[in-house]
Image 1 (spheres, rainbow, N blue to C red):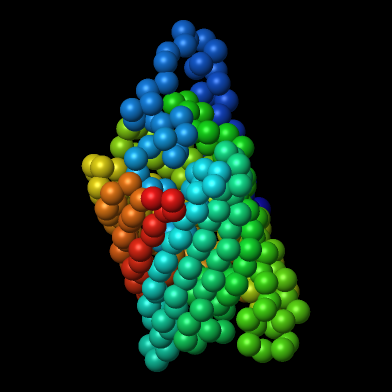
Image 2 (image 1 turned 90 degrees about the vertical axis):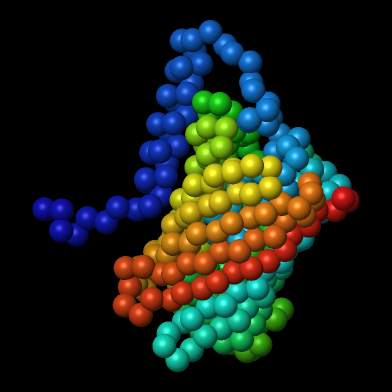
Length: 277
């Protein structure tokens, strides 16, 4: 009876969001209000001392840049696509604060084995894209934070004439739930068109982050892609982030695809900084 049933990842995320939100709302309604502990759950992400980055994780956070501030996130990735092919890719993400809830974004991914990387690597997005992040709700003690991210591929560096016709869009729902003063859970679900194809599909990710102290954070995440015309891609990765001061961060992460013959492994290292310092 259920042989052909397929569970859409968007349904899982939305069920979790609604359950968490309405449970928190009921608790706040039935219990006496308590003050927000800004020492462990900052009202605004940029009231905290630590820099907030969207990389190297595949799960995009809900924090936006403060108006007039900019942030640059740089990464170098090594991907073993199969037993004979590897790719070295650089990534740059520039984020600019437009208002207290909106930021503009510009992303570049470029390197060797370019077409195979965007076709096979689970951590690939677009070669060159612009977009936005809009924060809808701040994360509270009993309420998840919510943001939307939109990206559009700009085919100005397509390299091949046939690929210059693709203006591939991507739209993601980003959710963050504070579990404690040190742990949080973040989720993404989105719809996208592949970089150099008319194929469309879903993308999803789940990540947990542990704040060890003021300098070190650790994360573990799962992410995947689902399309009607291609086999789904699943991957996991682990990483560490080290904050040097309030405006600088370095990171190191590694991961591999799973549930697939011929696993794709990858390593990511990089540096991020926020302006004005």
